[in-house]
Image 1 (cartoon, rainbow, N blue to C red):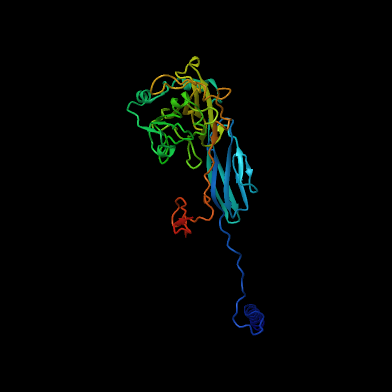
Image 2: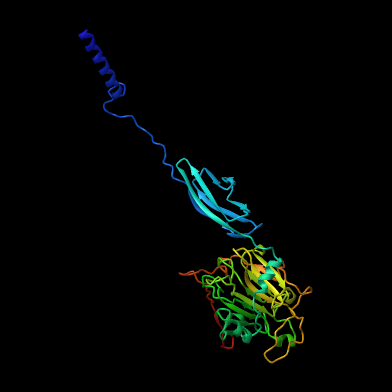
Amino acid sequence: MTRLLSLLTVSVALVFLVGCGGGGGGGGNSEPSTTLPPTVSLPTISSFTASPSSIATGQSSTLSWMSSGATTLSIDNAIGDVSSVTSRAVSPTATTTYVLTARNSAGSVTASTTVTVSSLPPAGDAALKQIAATLPVMPTDTVSLAALIGRVPTFASGLPLNDLEYTIFDTDYIDGETNGYDVFLPVDPSQPTPGANRIKLIVATGNVQLDVTYGGQRGDRIILGTAEISSPFFLRGSDGIDNDYVVITSFDYSFGHIQLRGSAADYALVRCTVADGCKTDGYYLFYTAGSQPDLVAFIFRCDDLPTSAVGGRPQTSTALCNASRTLSLSDPNQFRFATPVSTSVAAPGQRQIGTSGRESATVAFCRRRRPGGEEAYS
C-alpha cells in the first residue's frame, strides 16, 4: 500500500512538472505569452448647445453636439437615440434641460443644456401694445432726450464727415450726414450687454436734405445686433427695468435697414397709436426670445419727421416713405439679420505678419526716366 501511494505521488509530480515545463521538450522555465486587449477610453462630448437658448411658446430651438469615441448617443426627454445625427430640433412647452449621454464599452459621459420657454404674446397681440402704452413720450431731439435721461446728452454728428468718425463713440445722440450711406452703431460693443441702461436717439438724415433734393440717405444701416456678440443690443440691464432702447427718427422705409441678431422669430414689431393708448405713434420693436418682452427700438412713422434745427418741418414729408408706409420684419429691405464676419483675407496675396489684426498692403513704385529727363513713377 505504501509503495502504491509513493508511485501515485511521483506520477502526480511528473504531470505537474510537465505542465509547467511546456511539454517536457527541454522547454526550461519559459512562460506562455499573453496578448492583452486594447484599453478603451471613455467617450468625450466637446459641445452640447441649444440655439436659441430662449424661445417663446410655439417656437423651436436646435440642439447641436460634437462627440468622439462613442458607440451610441442618446438624449432624454423622449428624444432617444441620436447616434447618426449631430443636431435635433425641439419645441418644448416649458423650460427644459436636455441631457446628452455618450456611451462605449468603457462607460458613459453626459452633458446638458437648457432651453428656456417664455409664455409671450404673439407679434401684434394687444398685450404688447399694453406694454408699449407704459413707455414715455419718445424724444425727437437733444432737448427732449435730455428731459428723458435726466442730463445733458452726449452728441455726435456725421456732418460733414463720414460715418466712421462717430459710430465708434458711445454717445446719446447720433445724426447722419447729408451724403447718406451712414453706419450707425449706437452702443459700446465691448460692454457685457451693449446698450443696457441707456436710451439713445438716432436722427438718420437732416431736414435740410429733405427740403432740397432727397436721395443721399439710401443705404443707411443701423446696427442693433451682430452674430459675434451673444445678445441683441439694448436688452434690460441690471436694474431689470425696460429703460434701454434706441429711438430712430427720419428712417428711410425704402432704402435704409436695421440689422438684428438672430432671426425674425426672435422679435415682434408692433404699430401702436395714440388711440391704442401709446404716448407716441410709431413702431415698437420687442425682443421676444427672452423670459419677457424687451423693447430694443422705437421707430417713428416715415412721415412723422422732427422739426429742423432752423425751424419748420421739411417740405417733402413723405420722402422717406415706401408705398405702404409700413415696416415689416419679413422685409429684407428694412430688417436684416446678422451673419458671421468672414475671416478670410480681404486681399488675395496679402499675408498677416505676427498679429491677428487687419491686413496691410505694401505698394511698390517703379521709377523710370522720361526722354526729357524727368522722373516718373508707376
